[in-house]
Length: 130
Image 1 (tube, rainbow, N blue to C red):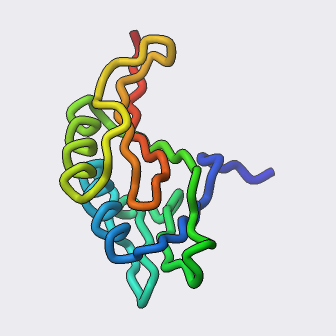
Image 2 (cartoon, rainbow, N blue to C red):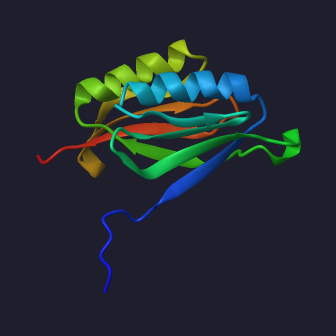
């Protein structure tokens, strides 16, 4: 039996304004140690160095009506500082704050939430042990 370490291999998000979304995701995810692993015309794929899965594929939507909306994606942060950096970078790159970084005791987590250019709910979460 093959063992895997991740529930999700990759996700795809289709952007109505690719350039705005690429600025947003590149800046926000860089704060979490996630960078552009591959870039081509209308596609940017994000993953951690030396680990190409799980990954996020950002693609130009061929039809504005087909853009991804209403999705919630949470990215793992290694620390509270990384969550803070994610929030600041995401807002500076055109995101809209949904929830500033704070502790969510019911989830034993420190999180921040930002809307991407298409209104998707993008989160950075740092799970805490106590």
